[in-house]
Image (cartoon, rainbow, N blue to C red; front, side, top):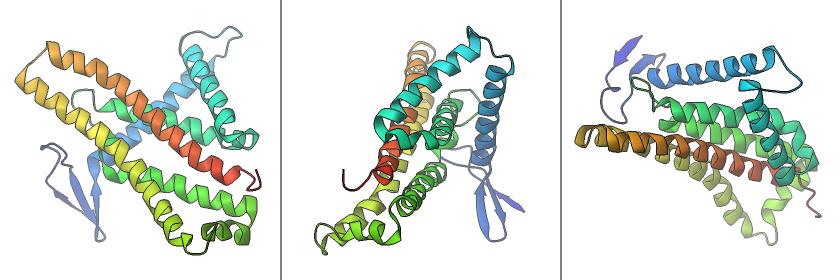
Length: 227
């Protein structure tokens, strides 16, 4: 296994080559770290459940309750079966987006491979659910509606979904980290600290936007085409 450069320049990555494939090691490490943090937070919040929640239990219950309400409003009753996936996706994105704000760490979401992988997961699930809910014939038939030539437009739309979904998150997170580094070099202390606080907010908002768009795409597969 060979190691390459990257990682020290903005937008660069530590590379490893194996079996003809190239891996961004820092992205992998930070992804595993984000997953570990989410699991630890969930364990801490559920280890000693109390009737009157407090601490992490209270925070996570508020977040989960808000997401469940949003899932029901956006996706309807059928969306409840996807609640574990949606909630886990949101929590992972929040943690992943904020990791880059910690000195010495980077956000796995500042790598297009991560955001595109998440977006493709969502879009593939959209089509799988569509086939399950409507059947293969009825589902693929809707790509040719209202007229057969519209299949070209519908296919382009489906191809654009993972691209726009992934690049929106990737661009915002990477740009925020770059600006934080530049401000730290040009005007230390006050302005970077203010931007750091704003970046925390941006990280949560971007996680919410990605999750909401994912829910919107998934809801189309769960809806009855006659409604």
